[in-house]
Image (cartoon, rainbow, N blue to C red; front, side, top):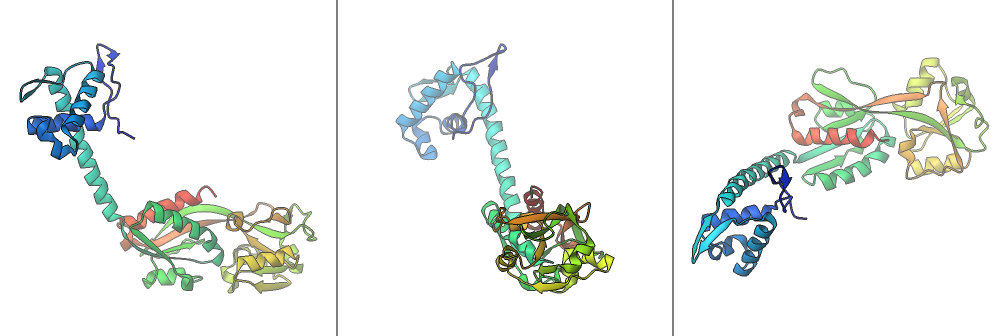
Length: 315
């Protein structure tokens, strides 16, 4: 698609040509600099015939002559001189802007190691990383699964660069930015005995087989934020690190799992599963992106964080 630049107005009425294409500005500038169309062919990579046709087309659209020529002498008309002056300003601004963009792109290149405090977070990270690969091919992102459950110490030891956590760390050497808030739901089979409750209370978990991704329990949101403060322990707890396997157990009505809906988008079977709020007001949590203060001037770090916030704010 040709790039359109400006609108010409004369005596309050638009001229025949409403917009001017970049190629016309380049043509005028080159003819002036080279002295003729014949001398402009090498710079514009077009034949003399093609350039003549382009000039004629431009003048027809403008409704006035840009050049007067006798034999080999090419001279700008008064109108042409105005277009030439404007074109130089526009072309210089375009060149300057692209140089600025290139410098910005160069600053957005680097390697980022990312981890989270919970295995379920990886469900959303994989698709986000794929998107980042398309938008920012110069940024290389690695998921460091081994740092799960201890991402903050790993940031401090520089083994990872960014951590996604649900509790803002208190450390003067770290930056933390609110990314998004989600809600944890109890997910159960449609024949589960708790299916008719408006929400699950703490006492409902005393007779429940709770399926989690992994231990320790301090990394499980429903336990740390809902059960532990009320001194409640589930009847049984089973750690299943694979979401697919955990869902199969729920499908078989062997227990319930507690996760946000967004983490199950690629697995969910809404006909057989029921989502229940945890507590009367729901179990909500804020997610933070944490990184070292010494990295906050690195553009590829801020590009990751800002895009992560934009991507997950719609969940």
